[in-house]
Image (cartoon, rainbow, N blue to C red):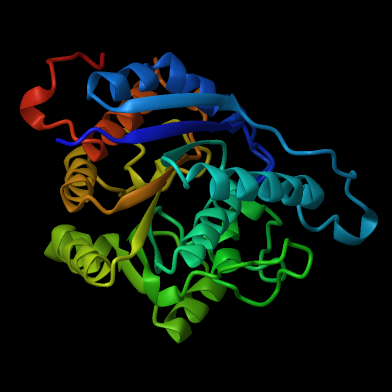
Length: 309
């Protein structure tokens, strides 16, 4: 296994939805030993600490329908700059924070990919497609909008200018099981690569991912991995405010991560929606660190016997 350089970016963003607690995510990962895990695998790791948005104006009456719009925009602008900078010399791992942060992380790494003339791809592991616009969102929670934003869909007039939209055909969504009607119609129109849990139940998770990775390698693409805690079944990962029963098992999730490591294609990573306030003795946090370890090269025979009780 080759040693790689990783940069941890703590993003205590907690304004993409009303349920509070994701701001504790980055420090929970550190408490669970994420730095030590990366180091023990023989990689170089630099933890730059938690970042915060620049000053922003409080919400005005015009946009009260959208929850904390200005704060979200300030976060996106800051994350974009950090992502575009850090990916130049390392593989950044963005520790969330809710999924609204991906509007900044993906747009930032995609802007860099454009500069080096490589196509940007995204593997979206999530129960939800997060494909609402500012107009279609009925909840006003902006953690449901990042994919629509970074693919350049209309309806984001308040958001920052998008330097390098990710083509919708360059995205694979795995594990879907909660899709709003507006999102469903749009995804069908765009012919998005979507794999729901029904498909996984019938045919398994390996084949669509393998096909996706082969294409990325063929075109020399860059791959951003975005892992939402609710990709996993809440039996295994209860620490998320958007639990949807019937998610991926621990072994299905590890298989995905092991295949990603074998592909050697990962160039940036999000770990999002961890809400330690809802966890059980760190169960979800430790599982997410374990999954990251598989992406970074830990094999089954390398894993020591542990107890999750």
